[in-house]
Length: 302
Image 1: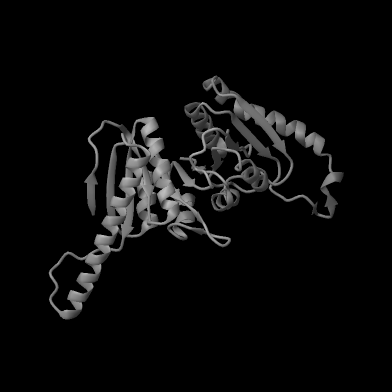
Image 2: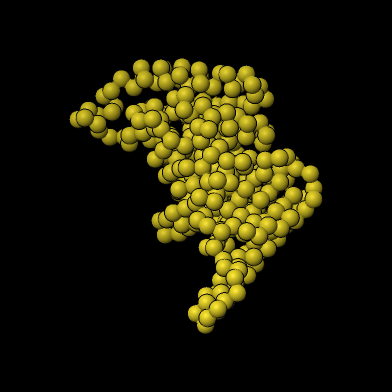
């Protein structure tokens, strides 16, 4: 493992950690993470993972070939980290910065790092109907990391004039996401939009019953009360945050994706407990980190 300290400036103890792979998405993530770390007085730790690199002296022609190849990999990785550090410095000149070349599996390394991070940050680059940055690692990390993971997405990740949007599923499991959303809105001086969709089903039919024929007005009244209850305690803790509540009957994915077009940050929970309560904690958060138009913060229950 190679670690290089870039600045001696004082910072908060828990750093913001960003994983990179050299893609355009990871560079956007580095810039976003650097600005956020500087704004919050925290250190930034840039991590790149590579397969274990042998340091022993080669004893055969084959060993020499493998050794040379692995040294090339090391040099390329160190150059990637240096380039990322330069991007971070350009985005936030005063940020405290370290770079780390780690050996081993990327997902496990980043999941372990998240246990001690203020935030874990990854980047996503839109491709033809998919995402690129750390490959399937991105979904593995967002599903299994500790604390909060931010996937930097969208055409303008640095947008600062929109609201913070949080998806509220109504369960106690989603409480950490609400708390994180209030914190982010307060730090950013932004409005908080709390979106609660009663059902994660799409509009249409279910069990042979047309949704428009169902007494959705009754549901709306009950869900409005539930949402107000979930937000009340947090509003007392963050009186500076202006909150707007939105109740939807259908489609949290579509509603939140639409909201992400003008939001500066979208906050969701990490996993559900089955049934309607938990609709935002699992498949919906996985979908949003692949399709949202702004950075997505996935908050885990721990």
